[in-house]
Length: 106
Image 1 (spheres, rainbow, N blue to C red):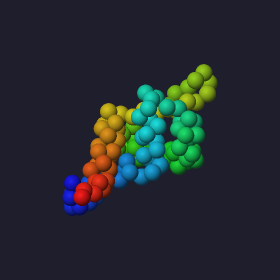
Image 2: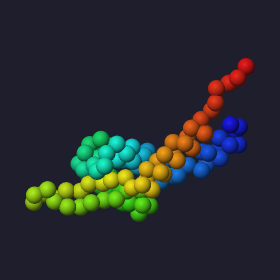
Image 3: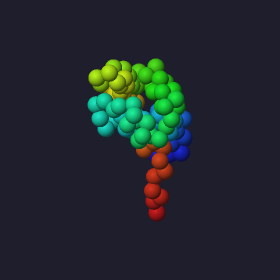
């Protein structure tokens, strides 16, 4: 791949996915059907407010779905990656691969 194609791959990155905190959230969610908010908070090391804000952006984009319910009488929030979110994450990695410098020849 030549430099213009590599640059285009970088410029075409989905900024919503590429942001480090949101990428971390998506990576955690990609490994499970549902992830509880508390576990997401621990694994991503984000504050409750920051995690909530990033999840809201991902939910607005259709990348995640949030489920609010109860475990007994205790509120329980969990998140799941949508099919659209899985596709966006896979495309993100493909664009990064296309943007990566190739080994030198000769």
